[in-house]
Length: 299
Ligand code: NDP
Image (tube, rainbow, N blue to C red; front, top):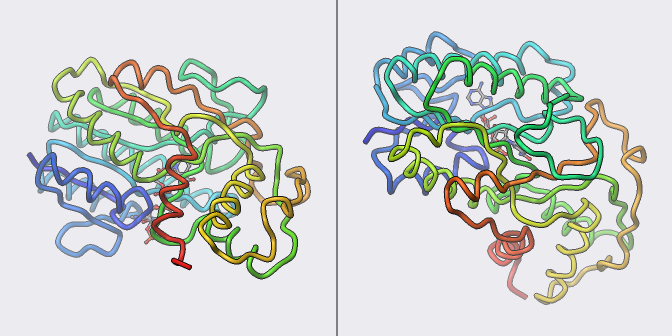
């Protein structure tokens, strides 16, 4: 089986290179790839890649993910997050291929305190959120065999992430200040990639599983709670910190103004996905602790 993976070096793309390898022969591209075009800005090149490769599965992990920058470059965000997924969907449909794509809790306005379900009405607050929502809609309109996973607060062991930033700051400063009025679940790229492989396997056996699903780790926290958890784990592992979990001050989002407005409620209801694919999503703490275990320097 031939699999085309786009965005191979992103947080999720990197892990997909691992998880998809067990399903088939993976052609993994990034925007600099030369044999095939993997640049989402080049819509013709992207279509040509699919036509030449004729994959059975396309997995798109590439996106314009710089949420604040998207506010000042809406056209680029739209090309990458709306038009490119639309092209992939059209080409996938022609081949009868599956298209797996990631979307975001930022399609919602963050109101209320209930986890969002797939039936709730999106109302994005940002250019990024709008471009991702329109990407979903293009895929739904053009490609019958699609899996769209809306996720939230993604982290990975590879590269920079929120936890690593908190650790660095806690070594430098006596006190940290972190937002405590945005709620969600930190979700590991590893988990997203593993679920993708499992879901694709099920969906290939039962095409009725095509659709839009919410996918995030179980439980919920705030960025403040997330930071405290990270520092507590680090202390426990023997890392010397100037600021421990008790030295993390809680502030509202308004304390850190950003160009893009973020949703306060990023909770995602994942019952549909767990039931459809017979999967269990672990607590967010399990994945974060594991990532810290991999990345913390041994004392
Ligand atoms: P990353 O930012 O880690 O990866 C995105 C990838 O897209 C990067 O490798 C980037 O390449 C690539 N990319 C950017 N522009 C182009 C282009 N023109 N052509 C080809 N590739 C390009 O994102 P994540 O892995 O975290 O995100 C994966 C998916 O999950 C995305 O769809 C995102 O919208 C969604 N998501 C992410 C969340 C998060 O918190 N990160 C939350 C919710 C959803 P380069 O490194 O060269 O720029």
